[in-house]
Image (tube, rainbow, N blue to C red; front, side, top):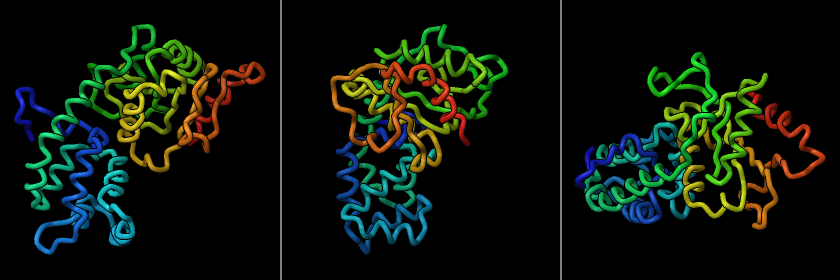
Length: 266
């Protein structure tokens, strides 16, 4: 589907997590009410290939459309284009027509944020020719041991992470923006937590984008890494996870061993 703007939007490439609160709120206003005339959220859920029992569970939610989108967006096929296609199949062109300007704006914001994500310098690119995808060779998806989420100011630590985990006997494969421009399946996600990371909207978006890339994201194990002392409080959403802490002198000697083992698990 093409945008009406002068610069067409490729909806099929943009993940559903790019849609902001305003779009989701309006979508819920359209789909939450049980309507005998127009398709509601249950029909959308069916077209998203949710089972009867799964849909029954969503009925218990105060805002089933919101929860449905949050769960569906973790699937690898969950793109803005796919969502628009589902709404069209459900004959809810009225929803598409009303939300199109907001959707286009969210897509443009996504594209701008993509430009803000860290761009790697040549020495970061440690891949060998026999290790899979490069920019010019293949469209076959590559399997990575981990997707690395980080802030630009923490790039030097990502350099060290690549040296320690890719260029050693561990021989792990890390997916790093924008070095790996054709990401495939990521087994895990490493989040490099710092004060700058917590201040960055782009990093928050990058985390959501990473989840949308990888199938089974709902059960994916996240590995938070702290490599320097922080002034800000550690994010509560990650407190239940085991943190790899590089700031303790007593654990630095086996920090990389521990992280490599965690990433090597099936």
